[in-house]
Image (cartoon, rainbow over all chains, first blue to last red; front, side, top):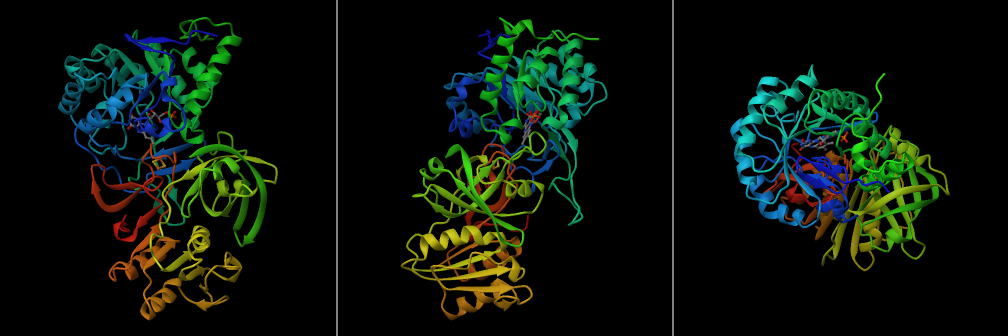
Length: 303
Length: 260
Ligand SMILES: Cc1cc2nc3c(=O)[nH]c(=O)nc-3n(C[C@H](O)[C@H](O)[C@H](O)COP(=O)(O)O)c2cc1C
Ligand code: FES
């Protein structure tokens, strides 16, 4: 059996499989089905400074090999999370990555300050959520603003800072470098791609928000390309995601330079996706006589 | 809640566009299923093409045989794939999920079902009608679409759009007349949104307790992803949106907002 443990900017994960933000709530629902402590980590549902009600229905449309979502960051707010959910999560024995989303640099900074005295292991700064009109997207697409917001938040954060990059950009490598220059401890990618679906019978946009975020296997080749390009552009660790459904998919991301992976939409197809992917990855690495996970990170042979 | 591999015991067309899927799932049934609850089924053979499971209401549960009956309307490729299952196939099923109907102490119950929404209503009738004074009102598009009427435990009145079976018109017309004659102490309803909206308008101003079963697209089915939101009047920390998969699918009629 391979040693699957990962050190991600000082935080030890017992394995590289992390539940992706927004698909796993705060972990309680999936914990009814299996011990979530078996996973390397959880990135919690995106939090904002104040509670948010989210977008009008419909919030989801199934698409070929994927889905569009427009939840609109419905969440109870960072204070309620710290009081009600974080203590429970910290007892589960997996790395707790707190995903934060803001409308301004100041929002992010205040959330980082509120989280500083807690036992949370890492912050994931979502500067790329496509569902909030004035929000995330503005920061997420320009290298300048990525640099600025990363620098400001890094100065206030007590925990390692992971910056989650948007794929809705021209040059992912440039944005990855901007996050690193701003002081990010690691980066994660990709968030969802923007898209729309149309209900032709009603001649209406399928989603209440019109625009949604595309996820699932449909985005996997693109996600893999971006993870590969970003990981070659920076020296900080990269966490890869986008359509991972199997252990083979996870290994492809590791080979392209990801130190760990996040699993999102797969949890909907198979509620046991995270532990299954972990098992499959373990078997695959054993077949390839891999002793330590690091051996495969970035080890893809390029032509 | 249980995740199980259920064996398909039968698939039969019971009305135009509606199939009865029988699943052998004793471990799931052992959890106890109440009317209005649903199961979440992985589509057979869809691979990574159609990822999402389908939430399907339970029409009947027979714990002694370990069999669950589901009525499935073929609305798209996903539900068509489900209805294409063959006896002996296995399907990944998660359930029971959600909060169902609660009959409480009601003695006179009106059951209102429209289209595929008749399925959970029929389950509720079989569970609650014996020993109570009940009546049921079913609406279908036409005679060919009707099902769930035979061997009912209480009188059933039917409407169809064309009058091909029962009265011509809307099921709410019958409900209105029956309420005027003698109001029930509970109404349970499931069906298309326009029907539910009318039931709400008939029940709430008259202070007749009423529960509506809602439908929404789902991803996790467990309460984690928040894609299945419906608007309600209940204001709490989460705002006015509730999750159809775990807070529902059955909600008190006075809490539901149909304005979007
Ligand atoms: C329903 C849903 C909600 C999501 N919510 C968030 C969120 O709140 N914050 C965030 O950073 N990413 C969010 N995401 C994006 C995922 O974390 C992930 O980046 C994306 O879905 C790609 O991975 P996947 O294909 O494995 O799902 C959400 C995705 C889905 C499907
Ligand atoms: S379907 Fe995920 S919360 Fe209801």
